Image (cartoon, rainbow, N blue to C red; front, side, top):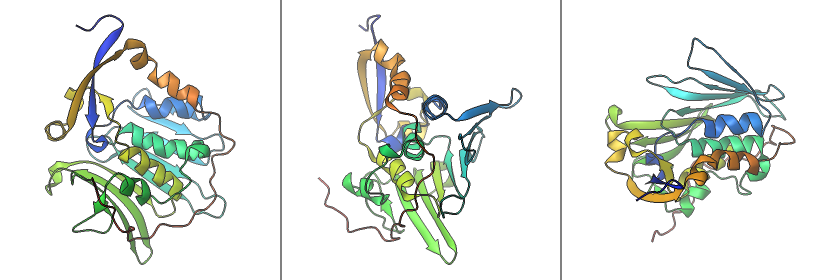
Length: 256
């Protein structure tokens, strides 16, 4: 029986089926560890965060359909303006991999190819699209380049029916590759995510791997505080331009 010093928690894998999680995992570190200022509208369920140099603006606005998270970044260091958006069921840990790489460049991968972390975890070339697909077939990462169009899409869907789409993340072509790689690295991480199983969509709940573990109550209660303490105030929110990843991913590795 769970005692007062411990609590039972559902741990969900793979991460792309775990649901959104607590938005504070992103907003609180941006404010407290990166110095972003915030504003809200008492008449609207909306939060707006702006970077110290006012180069970046993050808006969180829950909607029935569409993207909950929208980040705009002004042009800087020879790079044009760019933007990124995330659906409401996008795991906050994956979004945090993106925002941490933006505000704390030392957390970014030394190898900025967004496909790299996915290949390392057994993602495979898509059968009907360029890019990579998760081992369970429900998530895929695609880089589209045609004419002047250049964008990245990360989509999790159960089947081809539009009602089966769980979430989508979108990155404009000028988005720095280390940030996209921060997202894919956090998304591909095999470590299960703590969630309330009942918060998952029925489609994801039926297919996710669920493990119930008993953990110390303090570990659960202070996880966000520990995350904030691990981050340091960044010296700059700008990134140097990085090379673009190829549209066709590297040869797949054999899975176990």
